[in-house]
Image (tube, rainbow, N blue to C red; front, side, top):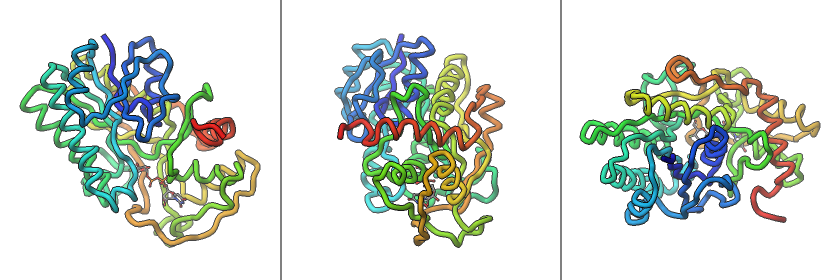
Amino acid sequence: MAILVLGGAGYIGSHTVYELIDAGREVVVADNLQTGFRAAVHPKAKFYQLDIRDRKALDALFEAEQIDGVIHFAASSQVGESMSDPLKYYDNNLHGTMVLLQSMVAHGIDKIVFSSTAATYGEPERVPILEDDTTCPTNCYGQTKLDMEHMMGWVSRAHGLKYVALRYFNACGAHASGKIGEAHNPETHLIPIILQVPLGQREMVSVFGDDYPTKDGTCIRDYIHVTDLAQAHILALDYLMNGGENNVFNLGNGVGFTVKEVIDVAREVTGHPIPAKMAPRRAGDPAQLIASSEKAVRVLGWKPEYNDLSTIVASAWAWHKSHPHGYTEG
Ligand code: UFG
């Protein structure tokens, strides 16, 4: 029996596949390679290039493989793009998940762990954020992820499917082996953008807004290492395998850092001055997002190992230094 990882060639998906294989699990990966990389897929995983909106391809996979659980990362995930092209997000994230669930129900596969996001909360009413706090997304990306959660709920009621939604805060860092790491094209995330300066690929970092109601005026985020996220997926799948009920978990470190603080940590880690300039706010950015992950710790037994931002940034720096152009040469 194998675990099917959809989107297993992407950033968080590829790290989860490495952890699953390290734990001795059999893994099948499916990815359309639109944003993922074939080179990110662990050599011991069986690979299918397919799009989850392709019902025939999914049906064929479920008929060919013995799948006993699904981990679903296959989605578009850029907040800014979701505001300018919302229908892409409804198509890829919601329609894609609908086709996936149709195929799973038809094949009697009834366990799924999937990527949700802190963006489901919108501007939080309080921090740290708890799972039953108000969800009011301020961008279409977060809206489609919340709608995916609701879709799972209704399908569960009708067909007995069991799901766990993992609401990630800010994923960052890279695998300890140095073989896989973060690679987006275009890159929009803060830590890889900062590291492009010491790599000589960018002259300076733009800080999007310094007039937020925070200690230094810049946005606060909760940065969580990708390997810790990957471990949470395995724990969530085991929870479902052991009869666990539908559930939603926040995944973060519970500590917030401002954009300026992250830049300072990157200066220390890289030894580079990393010039920064102030820029206007970016649309849709909440001032502050900090998780309470107490529920994941209590129910899943999750223990994030990377709770120090310097170590997290150092792991990202090791990957970017050795792969300055990600998975592509030159
Ligand atoms: N930022 C800058 N300059 C940059 C890039 C980012 O100042 O060049 C700031 C952003 O404005 C934000 C912070 O750095 O305040 C972090 O930005 P990221 O783009 O790295 O991450 P986000 O918090 O916007 O988004 C992340 C994930 C989303 C997810 C969201 C949940 O990328 O997928 O967390 O809050 F939806």
